Image (cartoon, rainbow, N blue to C red; front, side, top):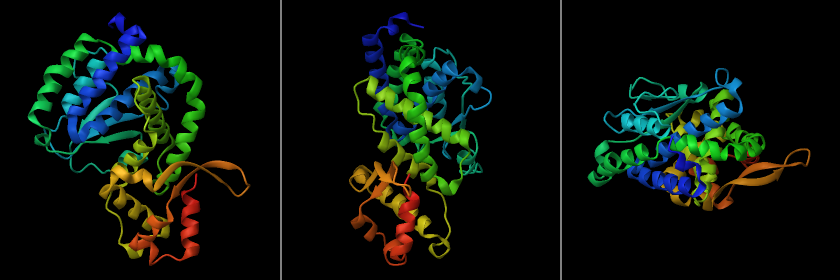
Length: 303
């Protein structure tokens, strides 16, 4: 490991450059950055709770149905960032088999990062930067992820228990229909927290709500039954996903995942809010779901 990285200013500059260069992945920037957060979360969890390594660990999968989209390069970069001088990665695998079912990624221990393609969608100049700037940067700053984990593990230990429970509770409600396993929820909660810490450490906003909105869209967009077969909450979920897909940049103007609401006992708990005017614009909801059903649906979305 490059020992100079154990100085906060050096680490910040090196990690900020890594984060900036990663934007050259174009449409796959977000999944790559979350894959990096997954690796850091695993390093931190392994260091703080060694017993979880074999009992609670998740596996990361960089997935796409398209070949030659940058999966192997991503694995190589993530290995280099840990100081591993090869493309072999013990926590990650890449997949491109079109027969792989998306549902398996949410009910099991695999945390999947979906890449879209083709690779030609990434400008030639950006591809050149990944090969000729990102790789040398990580070779020069050997063990970048390890150094970050060493400097921030005390912060992680102080906030992990409370923060992960809050994030996990939100995810349980968001992905209720998929019935994810607890270890999947724990793994995703950890990567969401790690991603927020990474961004804050390089003076960028945590964007936790953006990440959760991305996960909603990226994981739950699967083939669903016809509208007539859907429950009120499923109809609302489908409409929300479609709205995010069509206008993702403005999603937080009408979807608020960080509010606090009163439960049946009057206790304030984390919740999700959706503007009434937005719900009224959901054709499959506003014209087919009664007011009573809609209230039940929104209560179910409350955390």
